[in-house]
Image (cartoon, rainbow, N blue to C red):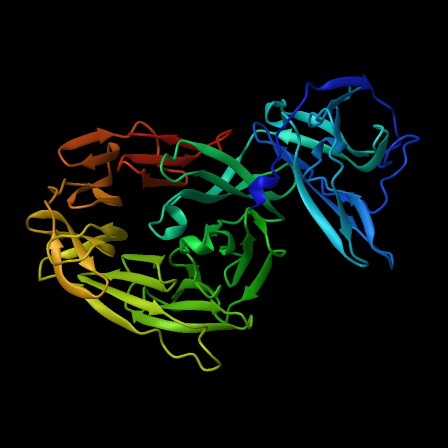
Length: 491
């Protein structure tokens, strides 16, 4: 696992006189470590640990033996110059006896190791020069990389903080957010404990982008959490995307042009068990409110297909997506008094057919469905528990949360909430067979409704936000904030 490489054993930082090299020089009178390179970014986040990938390449025709830095991180020295004429060294404390592990790099091959700069999370914001050196057996340094860097407070400009109920979100809560850097934007993956969302594990840098986007993290089952995609609109008619490999990227960002003048992301993207990416899209008609839902699918062949779900006279009230435990992509669509489910299988083929759908719920005259969300319904009598949909039906009795099975069956209504004049439901968090938690908006601000409890939310929901449930059912509000980057609170 990649996290095993994030080594944090540190000794006390040491101060030494700083040389005064020419701009861009590797080091003064210091030999360069042959074959080694380090990837240094222009900007890092204050309060987050600095992680540096080191790569050794063998361009020769014979095998190359080098130190195993994953097992011997004390051989790497990180030196920071804050412009005061001194170098502050940070390195892992060496053991009393160096075990001397080596590794062999085959001809034309390479090996990559990700190391954490010891105690870097406590460094102050500011401008530095970072020098990375490799130490030999007697402690003599060889320069690997040198770069001017900036440590800056986090500045999120967009974030996807919505929580899912698929396997990927049950133990580890991952979110994506975009940081406004001094130049361009940095895409980060934020990781927290899925059981206790306030226990944050940090943000991991994914990519540098030259434009502001609104990233969305794909839903996936638990077995595919490190293989899913991040997607964003890149202009009105292109989709930008990357695929994860653990807590970093599998490949550089790329874009796919869409065959329509304009399109919008309709719901969270999906990575299925076969690794195919499915992106629900709303394609508005040239005039009026009509349009159609399509799903962009990119399978292992890499060729996109654009399958139709349905055409509508106006945009659906809600579109939700999930990958079930079998690894199949499911898309739920609410429109008026109807709740439909579409199952996306395969990559669409050369002549993609429409995605098959089926009606799960139809409410009567005078009622409508205001929200729907995927959740885990507990077993009840002869009804087996498992992944299901909860619809919020507005009718004469109020707002009635209703469980609906993915295979149909008799809907299971729960205790209704009274409809409050001027308020609208924003988010729904199922709580088994008890009344769900409900976030509503109104003229006086947002409120949390949970059973008989009504709590005014003391924070604004104008920026990006999401609401999730911990392992004990407690509701947590998550917001993108300056220097957060994610603020977590219990209403």
